[in-house]
Length: 411
Image (cartoon, rainbow, N blue to C red; front, side):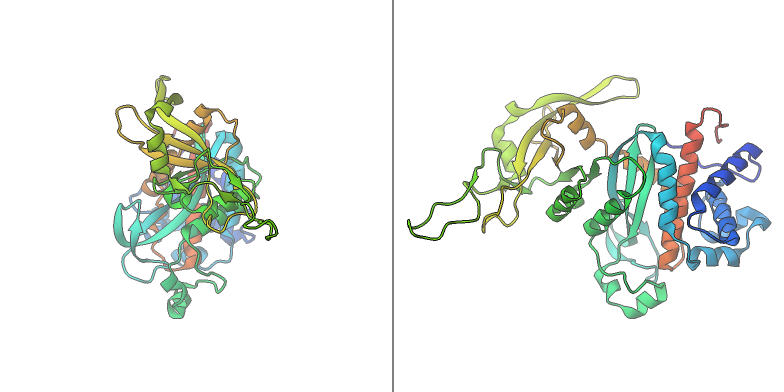
């Protein structure tokens, strides 16, 4: 799916022309000044050229006399163009071409030296696999049969950063930016992308997002479907649970108004475990590169989750799918998911969506390894958003080049 980033100064004129046409289309809504569009096109070109580092200084050096360092620095760190408009334009241009199947919510670490880059601290990063000095970026991507496209970026700002006026001022963090958890940032990205002129699709995410009941409820209220990973400790009510109004304590007593369950919730791991392997069914969830079916065993249940169940509920909690992958030969399931997809969804489709999130790793690999997503060295809040938006645009151009059968393949 990935395409190597390799547009250089000696590229065929047709490649340069396609890049300039693409830049004109995706930058025009955000950049109303000619110098902004010129610098934006040059920055895209610099990101796409061969070179180990895509930070500003080596990028400008590769462009030779075509780019002015001071002008490019101001364009990236301070120029008042809206990066969201660039991300939206790229998404609306690419999404119809890639056959969108899902939206994937995730986060990734940006290793940093020092303490002045906005949001940087020693914190755990899944992409690093450890605690390190880094920034954390939350991102949303559309994943399709023919490619992927980023739909939004949000820089996580830890609470100590939010409370430090001096650090905020130095990094030029807007006053309206307040502390948001990663799931809260993720929901905001989803709600924003839902206003784009692109196909909606089920949202996928790892356990950090799936275990957040508020996130799932907010997505469901917004009409967004999801298939989100959860941990085995997550508590749900078994399918046989009955919610009913308790009887009055006395004939003349006050009528009860809140439904109560006839049993306590149990952990997902315990529920699946007591049902046993006889509830497993083998389903095909994708084909391998040679077209051979890839199958595994899954358990599918309809369950309900209610966090504050002791005080009862005003109405019966909504049902969700509980999906557990339980490979043959394993003593227990390997993965669990909760989903609000319709009750009549085909098991194969549900399993396919659950196992589709891996494609985001290919996205990050190209965005970082080839386009320099994590190479921004500036200390500006806005600069981080400008850089990620332009990296998204460069990624979009490479996807178009791969999809165009008439385009000369980039080396």
